[in-house]
Image (cartoon, rainbow, N blue to C red; front, side, top):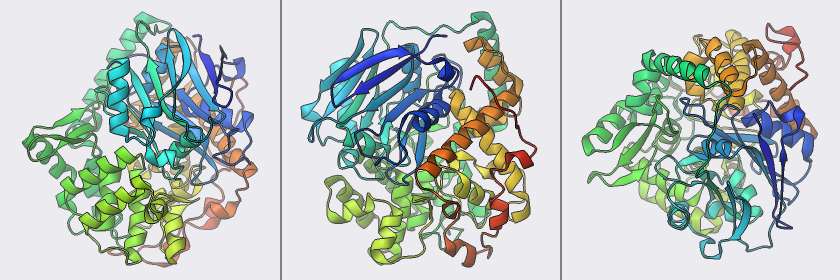
Length: 579
């Protein structure tokens, strides 16, 4: 399987293409972005400096119609945390990059200030083009214009106004199969890295290109089996399609871990109004679309297309993290209002999670009243036009706390927490504290573990194992929602790697790969100046009891300090030369 690395220098407008080096050839997704950042960039450089790279890599298995295996990773030094960042999303980017034979796209340099550029990738080659009419344009208008010019089959990765302003919460947005730019590389400020380089868009045109698996017959058999397993599982085959990721909300609320009014409580009294059931009933009753696949061929279909009471499109997709942090965390109990805020964040190009945490801090500071939707909407609009308050919000939750002297800021390594309070779901506190990415739930979502979430003694080992597995899935390009099948039946993952790439690999080797990548990411952060003191939750969570259950985060520092002690765990220990 031949894959290329495309290096684009925006300072000199130069493009260099070469085969992926042998030592990188069996990496994809997160494994490739994190390895390139550690081995071939300076962790001490400023995140927005020209020499700081922005790297995109489709998952190793991307390029086929295998369900939920076409996720794309983006990596850079985070302007929000100052450490390594990998963010991945669905949509069509990974599929199209893989069909073009591109294993990695690395962008360095910076165009002159005020530039607005695109990088266009196609079978004809790579070109850098000016987009002067799109400077400052919103994500949705940019996508519409570029699809009109280049055809509706293209894939897009877009930087919005927040990225052009270099705000640390700026995200990058990718198009879904229908061309809506609603699949986000959401966390860590990667949009600001693109904006600092003058990069507005990546255009991916895979017309006339095909991807052939190593063993087509074996791949067909594997695809049928994997699809059947996903459909047979009650969660991946039914619940996700009906309720989307919002199916999680009532369970988290029941556990007392739903962030409410700036993480001051764990149960929202109006949770049913923003629940997965209410979302399903609303979408179905208005003629919207539930059971939507964010990637071509996905049979889990946890995405949706939310519409207004007249059936007009609002946003795709309205998901749990956004509902939790722009809803319950701000005292807002109306899905229509949350959907409007979601669309506004998407258009500006800012992370809905960090925005929800930052606004919660400002509400506690008295800047607006809990539940004041019109004021929240106006404040998000201020981010898009760059007012002083807007720039503060766009700088993230920690900056908002410092500006207003608020100590209850739910963030680790500078990044706001996802919609699970770790005082009630303590394994999430292990994930938040130990992930090199900051408070990132996708590094190891402990809500999926069959443990007592309130017992601090039983969290570390299963959460650590989950991190290894998720890192491997991120490298392969699998959605972590496949985990109920792919992790339960690892032989299917082994068969997928063999059928698509021709490489025979044991699942234990993939776990070793996960360990290797985690250690590389941690080493990057060490070189960037991180210390163990940054692997802790905010102090208020260790002292302030969370209503209604009264829990604090009490996994001991000594226990957390064992997280990277792989030699002392039951996990893999050997070294794989080809990685």
